[in-house]
Image (cartoon, rainbow, N blue to C red; front, side, top):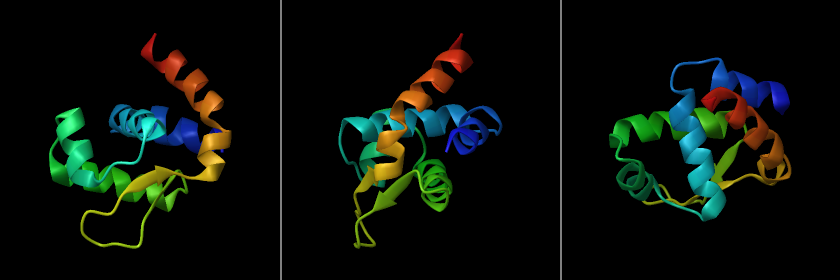
Length: 92
């Protein structure tokens, strides 16, 4: 998980936005539209990052297609402290 987080957050374009999404979803579940409004980012941008995070087992969604809520996976919740360490190193 540590390598995956380093790659997704520090190793690719868009890592800062993905980190913001992870932080937001740590607070509570949100749907893509809510995330878009909260982070003041384009809906398509959010959709792209959600797909990347979901493909890497960082987040998961409900069964609904439209308005599905996204949550951090159990695996991500267990590694949230590692995410914070990575995020702290990047923002300095």
